[in-house]
Every structure is written in structure tokens, then in C-alpha cells.
Amino acid sequence: MPLTPGFRRRARESEHDLPPGQYETRDFPVLSAGPTPRVTTDRWSLDLTAESGEQRSWTWQDLMALPQSTPTVDLHCVTRWSKFGTHWTGVDVDVLLDGVETSASYVTVGSYGGYTTNLPLADLRGGRAWIVHTYEGEPLHPEHGGPARLLVPHLYLWKSAKWVRSITLMAHDRPGFWETLGYHDYGDPWREQRYRGD
Image (cartoon, rainbow, N blue to C red; front, side, top):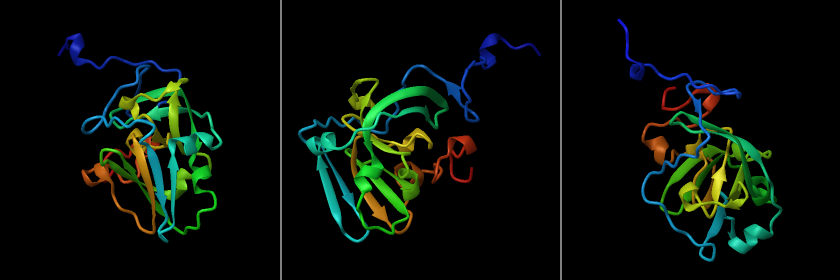
């Protein structure tokens, strides 16, 4: 039976390797749960709490004074878009964890606005995760998580919490916002781990 063109998915060409089920976009779609928090840099702070109770805290000025990295990374959203070659500036999470005594295996990252997500601590180490504040040379817009967000590009983008407020080191895993609603606990785009059971 012949189909009209609207029933057929348009082929999307990409010069990049796409994870399964993804298409390339050159836009930067905005997808958030709830209203966008408006956090000014004079009110922003980031707290890190180890499972021992040890705490560290950084103001915006503290964050800017730390060594800065400029990662160029690909993004993969669970809603099926991928964006290649994005440029960021921020602080490597290894810098924040330097000297912290911990035997934790997991992390809960919290945001202004109440969002949380969970990750293995190993996925934030080794130069694979950053607290970023600048995107393509400009201050990160609030709709994309500004003034600062977590960036973990090897996992689906919901793991890169916008409006980052806290990092809590934990001995045991604890599902975050989307994970409790049925999303995959880990979220590897190359293994297409979108939902629980994938």
C-alpha cells in the first residue's frame, strides 16, 4: 500500500557516528521538568558532601578561581537528538574531588529547583565530567542550566544536571528524579539505556 510522504520518517544524514536510535541536530533543544530556576552568580554556590560528613563549598568566585578546562564534546539526549562538537568551559570534577577522603561508589547530584540524578562516582572521574559555566564562548543561558551545570557527555543528557547545587558522595546507589520515574539507572547512549530494563 503506498504511503504519503508524511508517514515515512525522513532520513537524516550525519557525518558522525550516531548512537542507536538518535538523529543529529544543529539546534540546542530545551527540555526541562518544571520551571527554569533563575540563579544569579552572587547567590550561586556548590556544596560537596562526602559520606563521612566532610563538606566543601564553592562560591561563584571560588569556582572561577579554580583551573578551567575547555572540553569539546558530543551530546546525546534520551529524546533521541544528538549534537556534535559542542564547546564548553568549566571545572573538571576531578579538581573538586582532589584531596577528598572517600570510599563512595555513587553520587547524587542536586539542582536548584529540586531536580536530582544519580551516577557512579567513577563516571565523574578521569577527565570525563565538568561543572560548566560557558557554552560556545558565552555565559551558559538559564534554559540550558546556567549559571552552571554538570556535564557528563558519555551518558544521556538527563545525567548532566542543570542548575547544579550539590554533589553528595554515597556508599550506595539511590535513584534520582527521572530514574524513579522509570528511566534507566545508568543511561549509556551507545547501549541505548533509555528506560529501566533496557
